[in-house]
Each structure stands twice: as C-alpha cells, then as structure tokens.
Image (cartoon, rainbow, N blue to C red; front, side):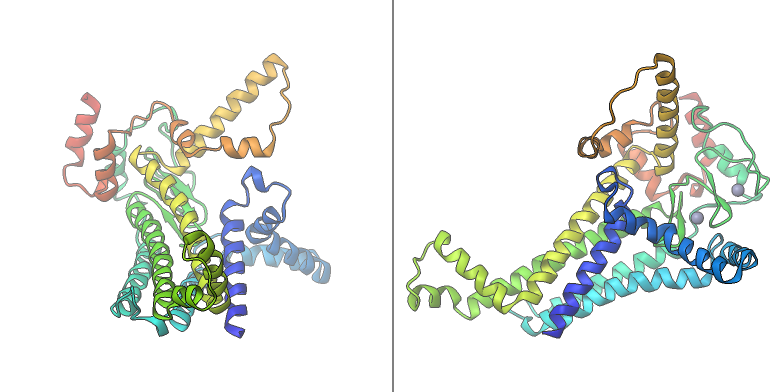
Amino acid sequence: MAVQWLLVCHGLVTLLVVVSFLCGQWPIFQGTFIQRIHNFLTFGAFDYFRRFVEFVFGSRGSNALYLAQYYCCDRPNPILQVSSYAMYLAIVGGTYYLIVYSIFNYIPGHYIGGYHRYTSLLAVSVGILLFLLTSFSDPGTINPENVSKYLSVYPYDNIIYSEKECSTCKILKPARSKHCSICDRCVARFDHHCGWMNNCIGEKNTLYFVMFLLWHFFLCVYGTVAIGLVLAGRLKELEVVYILTAYYGIEDSFRSLAPHVVQWLLGSYNTQILLMVFLAIVSLLLSGFFGYHASLCLSNTTTNEVKEAKASAEALKASLGDLSQERKPPESKWKSFFRRSHLEDVEIVKNNIYDRGFFQNLYEIIYPLSSRPSFSTHNNKLKTG
Ligand SMILES: [Zn+2]
Ligand SMILES: [Zn+2]
C-alpha cells in the first residue's frame, strides 16, 4: 500500500513540476496555480528568501546575497549543475525503480519476454547517456580563434542579424550567435539556454538535444506498452475472462465484460495502472516538445530566432496600433491558447535565408557547418546561389 502512495506522490509532483516549469507561462495558465508554481520555481523562491534576508540582516545582507547569486547562478556553477542533474536522475531513477519494483515480478509474462528486464535497463542507460552528452558537450563556443570560421559559415541576413560586436567578449558576433549571460560566452547558432541541462543548446549539440527528447518519448511509450502487455498477460494467465463468464454468468461480449475487467485491473494492479497513465501523459508532453524542435530544425530556425521575430512583429503591431488608435477587446485565454500553433512559430521567421530545404537542413543538424572542412567553399556557393 505504501508503494502506491509513494507512486501517486512521485507522479503528481513530477508532473506538476514539469508542466509548471515548462508551460507555466502559456496564456491558458494565466492567473492559475500552475503559473504561480512557475513563477515560484523560476524566480519567486529566491525573491522570498532575499526578502527574508533583508528583513533579518538589512540591506547589507541582501547585497551579500546578490553577490552570492551572481557567483552561484549567473555563471555555470558546480552546485547548480549537480542539483539539475540530481533532479533529472531522481525523476528517471525513481520511475525506473518503481517499474522494477512493481512490474519485474511479472516478466516474463504471457505476452512479454524475459529479455525486457535487460532491454529496459539498456534503454534507460541510453537516455542517461544522451542527457550527459547534451549537458557536457560544447554547444559551439565562439572564441577569437574560431570566430572567423563562424563569420564565414553564417552570413548576416540583415533582418535579425547584422554586423555587431559582443560587448562582453569583445569579438564580432557571427550571425545566428548569441551571448548567453548564464554561461558568459557567445554560442554559435544559439537556440536557448536549457536550465535542465545546465548548458546552452547551440550549433554543435542541437542533435543531442533533439535525440534526447525523441529517445525519452520512445522510452515512455515503451514503458506504457510494456505495462499494458504485462496486464494483458495477467488477464490471460489468471483466466479472468473465463472466470467472469463461467462463474459470474456475465455475457461473453466486449461491452458487458469491459467494465468488470477494468474494475478487476484497478482493484488488483492500481500501482501498475498509475505508472502506465503517468508514462502515457509524459510521452504526450515529450512528443509535443520533440515535434516543435524537430519542425524548427527542419526549417533551419532556432528558438531564439522565433523569439526575435515575434518581438519585432509585436513592436510593429504596437506602432501600427498607436497610429490607428484602434483598441481591440483582449482575446480570451482559451482562444489564444488554441491559436498558439507550432507551425505559426516556424512560419513567423520570414525570409529565412538559412533555410536550404528539408534534407540540407537535417544534414546541417547532423553535421554542423563549422565542423566541415569545406566551409569556405560552401559559403561562396551560398553567396552566389
Ligand atoms: Zn559574447
Ligand atoms: Zn548558456
């Protein structure tokens, strides 16, 4: 019984943290507790702590805290790194532990082979490996030695990117790069800084990041299907349908049997069913994140470029709105939620000169431009073509 409660708490807390952290800013969650958890996780917890320190120690205390925050949080820090890794390992390890504890007794089963005890461990290990690869790989750090290479590989589009110097690194900013204030470095083909990975996602590790999302999606689907097969096997092994029809006289049809079978499963295997539902929900979330990033990759657009294009579109709309003095009633949050389409995000970056077609874009993710020996000839071709 204790395990079931542990599972319920683990599942609910994980789901709440993941959804709040990643989607808390969406319009649909405005004013809800999901948004409040998001604010708390992103900056609120620290703010409350700062106010408490200021209350107890005065302004000197809060100044010291700001200084500590600068050294601990605004630059890559081993403590922050360890806590983000611990969180990932706790979620994956906790879920796998519960699967081993509640499912492995029934493997091998009628519909599932004994080898799944080993393939599941292998699948989880690959997931952890992809996490480590994304976290520890170089996202494409720009330094005085390699800046000329990046400048020649990525031409300026003069829409989002024009020739500029990074005020911190004091080197020219190649197109598509951005200075990450957390890592304190310029990153080529900057996508975003990932708090979970504690690393930037850029030119050289976008492939690992997308593979990480895809693999974890498959991992959750694998878990959901495997638990389903275990439960179906238990139904068969215990001859539940036979008992229900022969002893209880229930009609042998799907419609009359289904409620009884579901009731029996919920009564006998609630831990396993909860695990299955949890994995199914997480796989849905992951499929959304993977789909979004895959569509960006295939159109050779970065999250950062979508953000930039949106900001300039908003600014244009605001200036046009000022001119016409026309005020539209605010859109309902349901309407704006359903309007939020990933395709819209991809299409928002107009005249994307880096989009060179489906296969070339995919190849660029697998084999980054700056890693190719023929980068200068490629660039000449881009200029003339
Ligand atoms: Zn910089
Ligand atoms: Zn970063």
